Image (cartoon, rainbow, N blue to C red):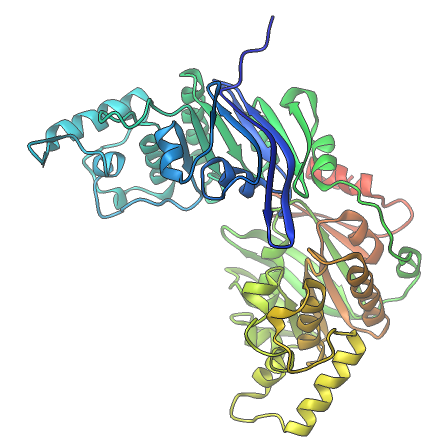
Length: 511
């Protein structure tokens, strides 16, 4: 039996930004009446592909075909009018208006310039009923929980206009719609997705929850580093194989550090987290970090790695559990508490949560130390300049000019400036969230060697990286996370391999 024609086909898609090729010849196809998962780690190109399709970004190369016709959209409105609708994780509706008003906002039935309210409510009720939802369309949207508001956003997207602006939704894009929903709410969303599938709507589903992918999807496409690595039927690829495709195994040009870490010693316990957790962030977990120990965190995007780190730094407030440092319980209600306890945190978002691009290298490096001292006690100029020069030399920051603007440095040197900022405070525990993402292999090698050196000097490190080889190379202990739970803690040794970690991630169980 011949395969049906795709409703959407993207061929050889190329998208470039200054200095970066975000998509390199990506192919993607979507068939009528299927739920198709688009998968990949952070930076794989998922969001860029969706934005190119929907007209948020211009297309630099390749073709897009919708229902057999070549298309290229200049805006999301054009894409919507052609039958491509997108519902994002954050509900973008008006909570002060009724459900019916939200469904038809901007396309209300009118007569002589006046909205026909009775007709609007009737049409909204018919649409909600057709989709099998039990929602009072006259009630304010704000009276419903987030899950129902998400369903209303989908109803709005698939509703057919009476004003000739389109022929109904052919493609529905759901971008992380389940990230804030509980299990019952997810099941209700899945039921709606299946009803739309039966009506012939093609659904592109983005989610980092693997169990959900296997529960509701028919086909999956996997991207990595802006390239296509595979399209598979869900029934043809198990979770271990999927994780392998998503993470990949890049050519490693780094010096071998693994054996060194396996045979290095760690000291007495430094930090102990007992039942620490945050509702909606990460389930309660226990974690012990010893002096001089490198704890690596492994897991897919959205598994809870960053959420765990933010709790230990006080960037997010826990609603359960406690933290002790050096045997003394400490409050983690704010980052200042963590800094006072000797904990430093380099965020994965160095440009938005770490560096201040318009400030100089010197000003960025000195920020944390000055904050720890208090702004009413400025660091003497001679001491400040001596410290900054020391860390510029130690980390080989280039250019070695403390007055250069950080925003003008390469990604690797920006990362070094962020590391210098925290190292200058001489922390007991350094939390590094994706410190080598987006930097060249030389800078990556230098940062990994630095981690080993800090560990040798007695500093504890919590290390998060998407590349499993990187976590395995540097860590004494590997914490494995899945679906926002710490599911295993593996003592690194000859029997711990990337395959073993992959199996643990895929199964959610200690192997």
